[in-house]
Image 1 (cartoon, rainbow, N blue to C red):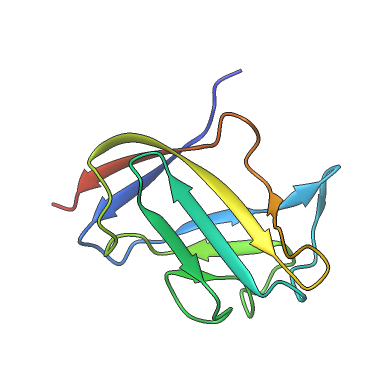
Image 2: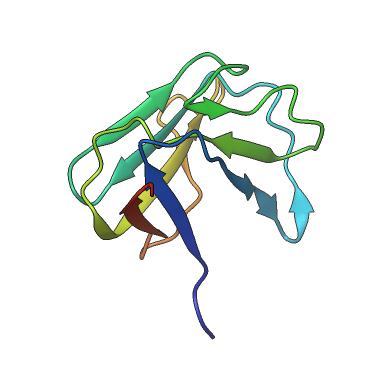
Length: 111
């Protein structure tokens, strides 16, 4: 089965939407205090403000939805993977959502 690849345009305001599900059910993110993406090029993007970019998860209009805006981040062009981790008071060591192979991203310059 082909893996989904999210496209990130460096220098743009484009967004990527990710829906976090467990057993096919979108997960409640209301207790989440922080979300982090650890990219394979060494760039880490973390947000503790749930209603502001680069990572929003509150007020998105859908349970379990994360909206990301990575165009301003210093990501390396090309194909990258990322580990997605959510943190909350019960899971202060974080929950990894991306599996052992990570999420797939392709980074390109906005034209």
